[in-house]
Image (cartoon, rainbow, N blue to C red; front, top):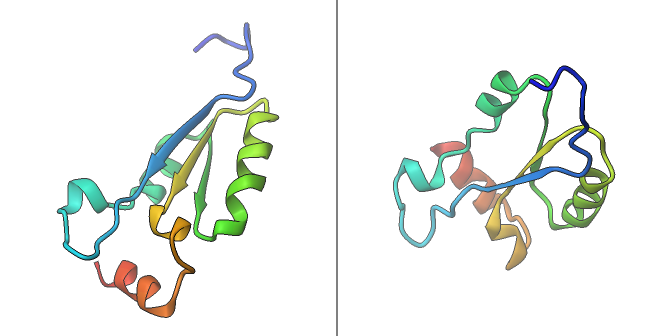
Length: 93
């Protein structure tokens, strides 16, 4: 929109995909719209954080990037390792 007149260095938009356990809160709170963001936001980097080890590195890269970044987090990764059961619950929706 600025036609290159200014840079958005370090712009981070943080999005979380809500947990489906212990109760399913509904699609509006637990929907994963990663692919929709990627298709709509051609000039914005979209990164889905699926492992706790990716979080720090991804934030560091985003803050130093000249490209705005959407970081999509799965809050469940902060309290437990991603087990097969968790991955399966995501795929079943």
